[in-house]
Image (cartoon, rainbow, N blue to C red; front, top):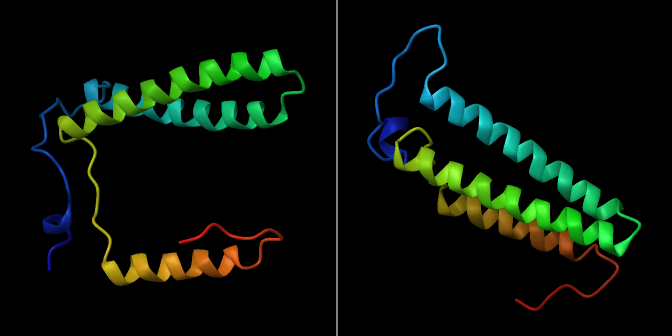
Length: 112
């Protein structure tokens, strides 16, 4: 089966393909940056020593996360971001692996 047939994607909006950055390039660059910032703010929240600082970083984190989602949605709508469906057996294997990890935690795992 062709790998492109399994892609979940909207029809691609055409952009000029030359040495200059186009709309797709700009959005992809911004999305990558927003992903980096979201991860960085998450680390900063975990390491904040003062509650007011934590709350301020959390507020910025939420804004950044929302912008990231909006960029992803826009790129997906324009066909510039695609997804590949996972096979059910691989999903089951991942779930079993996670359940195995849960049994190693020092606390009781959540009920399934």
